[in-house]
Image 1 (cartoon, one colour):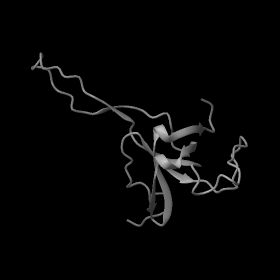
Image 2 (image 1 turned 60 degrees about the vertical axis):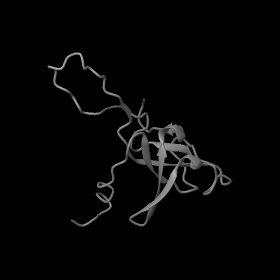
Image 3 (image 1 turned 120 degrees about the vertical axis):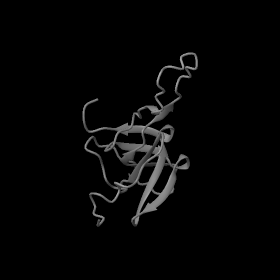
Image 4 (image 1 turned 45 degrees about the vertical axis):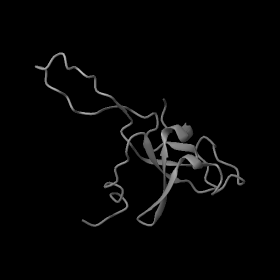
Length: 124
């Protein structure tokens, strides 16, 4: 299968409470007018970008029910979902993230606790 712009990230699986972020261009402004000033550029402590993919969230430990051995065990892992959603614009701490190159493009893998603010186009 040939990789296209639509499916090139399909094979990536983001783990746990992490999100995959693609940086926004420095002079790009959101519809709400939010942008980081020119002094806050690449290699600064705070960056902004769009969330491309998200992980499943925080895993919840399964309750141990050894007193009822006849019950079927549900080994399916359950997660608390993330507050961040795909398509959100995120302002995040760079020193809490990991820079990766994939298919010639730069992305950041960021744990949710390093995200300072989200901007969502739809109503909450």
